[in-house]
Image 1 (cartoon, rainbow, N blue to C red):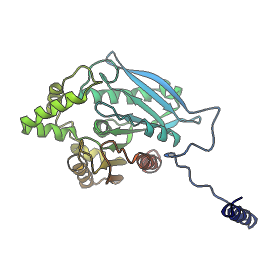
Image 2 (cartoon, rainbow, N blue to C red; image 1 turned 135 degrees about the vertical axis):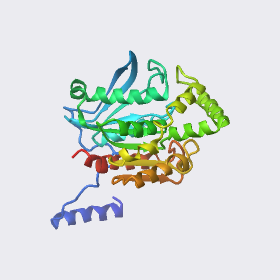
Image 3 (cartoon, rainbow, N blue to C red; image 1 turned 90 degrees about the vertical axis):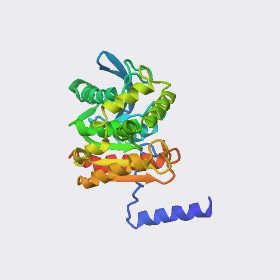
Image 4 (tube, helix red, strand yellow; image 1 turned 45 degrees about the horizontal axis):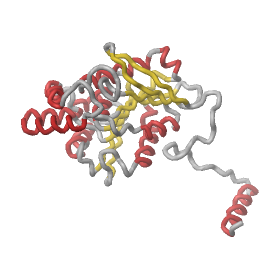
Length: 308
C-alpha cells in the first residue's frame, strides 16, 4: 500500500472512531451515473411517434428511473439538427427528469413539410400529447411539470412556445436564435435576405419540403411573432436560463442573446439566469460537461421551484 493510501485509510478510521459521519460528494448527473439502480422502475428509452395534421413526428422518450411521475423536458433541436444534444438528454435523465426528443415535420424522416411556423405548431402538439393522461401515465410523466430546452432554432422555439403555452413552466435557450430579428433585417436589406436564403439551402440536407427562399418568406410573414424580445413580458414571469457562446458565429450573442437579456430585465424578470461561455462556439463544442452541469442544476433549482 502506498504511504498516501495508508494515511488516507488511517484518517477515515480515525474520523469514524471519533463519531464523524462521512458524507459522500453530491451526485453530479453531468458526469456520473446514479449510485442506486431501480430495477423495478429502470431508466428506459422508448421510440414513439406524434401526429400533427396527419404527419408523423419521429420521437424518443428517455424515461428516468423510479416510479415517478417525473418532471419532463421537451428537448428541441436546431436547424437542421446536426447537433441533437442527446448528451444533455442523458444528463437530464440521470438527474431524475424524463426527456422527450422529436424531429419536426419534414426533418430527419418525420412526415410532412418543414417550415418555421410548423416548428411552433409541432412543439404545441407534442406538449399537448405528452400531457394527455394515457401517455403521461404510460411514460411516468407529470403533466404539471413540463419544461422546454432548445438549442439554436430550438431555443427560438422554446422561447416563443414557452410564452404561448400555459403548461410550460420554465424555459432554457442554448445559443437561441431570434428569428424575428433576422426577419426584420431581411425585410430591411433584400441582399441580406437573399444571402440568408442561400445559407438555409446549404444547411438543409435532412430537411424536406421547403427551400431557403420559402423559409425566408415564412420569416418575413411571421416577423413579429418570431421576435423573442417581444415575448419578454410573458417570459419574465417564468424561470429562464439563457446560455450563449462568445465565439458563436451562427447566432452571435450581440444579436440574439444580449437584446433578449436586456428586454427580460426591463420587463422585471425575477428568475433569469444567463451564462456566456467565453470560448463557446455555436454547439458549445468545448464545454459539453459544463453545459450539462449548468443545465441540470438549473432544472433542479430555479426551474423546480416553479412546480411547487
